[in-house]
Length: 426
Image (tube, rainbow, N blue to C red; front, side, top):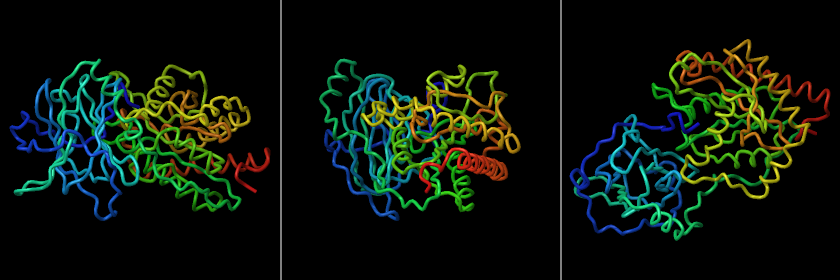
């Protein structure tokens, strides 16, 4: 959920001034960032980024961040849209509210977050083609904290694209989130994979009051996971359990690798246009090559751009996922998905406000596993004050997650009775 909606997960008012006016940063730093990626520090020793500010103009702009200690960084550019990506070891961001939303010079905005265990990322949205003149970290000295400094200068597209083509692609490819590649033990119970959408620099929708979709859906997914686990009927895994970025294709591969019997992706929507603030309610989506309506098409398009939000577009998938697209014709899996979606809608009627058209279909990448029944649940609209109040309420979260858990029970009781054992069960 990115274009046409606020995507900045961001916290703080930027303090800006002309380059060099507020920041007396020595110019002895190297011309290029250190591309070596360090080993992630111990959990209790993560560096802290405490303040960020911009300086400069449309010719040269500087981004400065205060750090609790020196770190190694890697910086590179991306095109269409123009972005600058800065990879860091895992950092705790403690910026003031709304940091990154204010534009200055060559920088429209920036966002930041965890992209994997041991790794964080800053994504800078540029106004046009830029060149990284310097990217370095200054050690703490004379009472001043360590500082990350990135100097950007304006350039033309031809020069930008030449630089991009010459960069070392393997060095700057995004690392996949670290996962145990061995399958979890299968004790015969169906495995449910719950997928909290977004995470890390990818915040999803953001309410006008600052609440972020990535946090809302993670809390709901955790509540649903706890209810399913307490029933004792299922094994439950989540695609993310903290605030980190997970590519869409990785979420699908994770569910398939683990032998999931059901995949439930959790999201929240938003509408930015005036006059649409009264649109509200939960919606349940299944996969379709043709969207059920224009709203479903818009949502799927926005969601499928999620891989680009962390700086590197991972939309081109390997042969495994290309094969998935062919296998989507598997009628049984689609039928199971539609059956579960209808069951969820029926249960949600008693616990939550539903959208006027609560059952829809669209081409969500995250639902494209050919052998795992999959649905995407939009809990409501963060752009609607009533929905937002409910989605951030413990009482609503409790009863709504209970309704989804009941839908899971109904789905498996009918599937086991009428269709043989669920995938992953003995």
